Length: 241
Image (cartoon, rainbow, N blue to C red; front, side):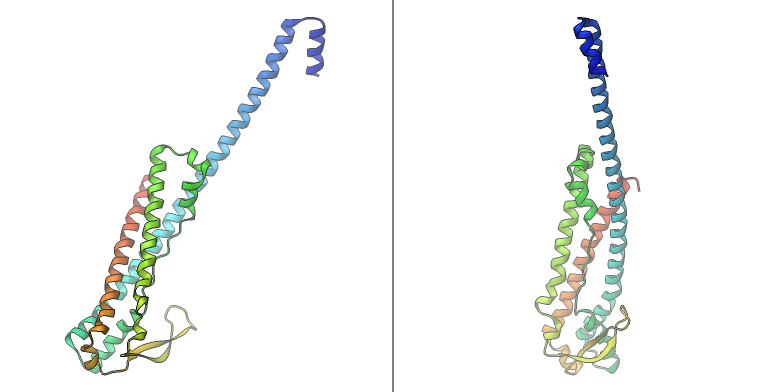
């Protein structure tokens, strides 16, 4: 309809009308593009706000994991240190052996902290989301991603460190009866015990070093986890949570 009217105006050489029609067409196209761009920007902003909400939820989940991890280390350290004291003092009594064995079984492994990182990776790696951030926010989120990645690398390395020479390989350590897991009902595992009298174990420096190594790794793990907790809490505070 508009094209036919323009053609009629051209035939009549009504250039004013042609100009008006042209302005109407250009204005319509411009308004359409502006509305489309506004709608796209609104969608991008909404997607970014949802991504920020996912980061907040991820951060809160990580903080819960950190608290649980630190609580586990705090619960395990006393038993291990009791075993160390028994070895150092050579407490060769039935009670001493009973107190020694829990620590012996704890040092079989050093479970690590597993951090979630999907949301932070998305916010720092998606071009649409990056365009929504100012320089300060972009730098803060990228620094948080870098800190968490480095912390996870360190925690993963610490977890494997004692397995270079597992306690099970020590000649003074053997297996005893099956005991049901206190964490997963229905799962049974063989507990560690001593194959030599406690008096002989006390004089074995290689055995004591396993305990010292576990203690050191646990302390480093707790230190790193504490740093992670600080970074996560600082980021939540900035995000207004």
